[in-house]
Image (cartoon, rainbow, N blue to C red):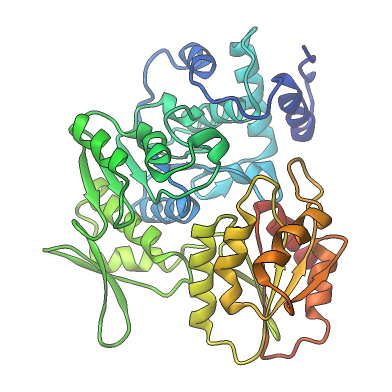
Length: 421
C-alpha cells in the first residue's frame, strides 16, 4: 500500500495518493464507503440531502438548485464531478470552491477513519466532501451521482429528494446496454415514500416500477409539470396552479425545469419571480459556454448521443450565417459514431484531435471511427491536440462562422486552458 502524505502535503500530493490507493479507477459498490462513513458519521447528517443522477443534465440541475437555495439564505454545499481544471471545483461551500487548506484537512480526516479500507479515488473524494459539508455547517447537501446511482458512493446517504434528469445510453460497460437496465441503476437513488423528480417525458419502465414499488411520489416532466412558450417567446415552467418564467441562459431548459420543480418541494413559499431572478444567475462552466467572439467559439462537455442532440439544437437556434466548425476529441469508450451522426447535420468542417489521458482516443482511431459516418467528401482535418485543432479551426474562419469544441470534459478542459490561461 502507498504511504499517506505527511503533514504539510499539498492537494496534488494527496490526489496522487488517492489515485494509487485502489487497484482500479472504478469499482462500483457501497460496502467500502459505508464502512468508513459509519466511522465518520455515526448518525445521518442533520441536513437535507438532494441527490441528482441521470445520463445528462446533472451539472446544470445541481447549479440551478444551488443558486435557488443560496438566494433563500440557506447554507448550501454542492458536490459534483468530474472537474475541469482544479479538483477544488468538485466541492462548493456556499457557492465558492473549497480551499486547499480545507480540502487537505478533510482528506486527513478520511485517512484517519479509513484505516485498512481500500477506497477508490471517487469514494475517498465523496467522503471528504461529506466531512467538508459537516464541518462548514451546511444545511443542504446537493450530491451529483458520479456513475449510475444504485452503487455510486453518494448513494450511501438517503436522499430527502432525488432527481433523475434523463436516462440514455452511456457507460454501458458498467450500467447495461439498454435504457431499462440503465434506468434501474439510476433509480437506485430513490427512497421509500420520498419525493423524486424525473426530468424527461419518457422514463424507462424500470424507473416507474421502482418508484411504484417504493411508493415514491414521482413528479414527471410532461405529466406533473411542463415547459410552454408564451406568445412573446418567453419559456415558462407550468403546473395546474403555478408558473415560472425561465430566463434565457443557454442552459438545458429541462434541467432548469427540474430545478424549479425541486425548489417547489424544498421551498414551497418561494415566489415565482424570485425563482426566475435566481435562475438568471446560473452559470455552468463547459456547458455551451462561450469563450470567444468573432468568430464565436463555444465549448461543451457533451460526450454521448443524447448530449450531442441537445447541442445540435442549440447550434440550430443560433442561426449561424457562416460555417459551423467542430473541434472534436473523445474517450475511447464513448459512442463516437452516435455523437458524430447527431452533430453532422449542423457541422460543415471537422477538426479532430486526440486526448492524451487514460482512455483517451488517439487520432488514428478517431479518424477511423469518424470517416465512415461522415462519408466521402467530408472536410476532416487532423491535429496533434485540442489546442492545435482550435487554432486550425480559427484560421481562415470569418466573423460569421461558429466554432464548437466538444466531446469530453477533458476536451473542454484543454480548450479552456489554451484559450483562458
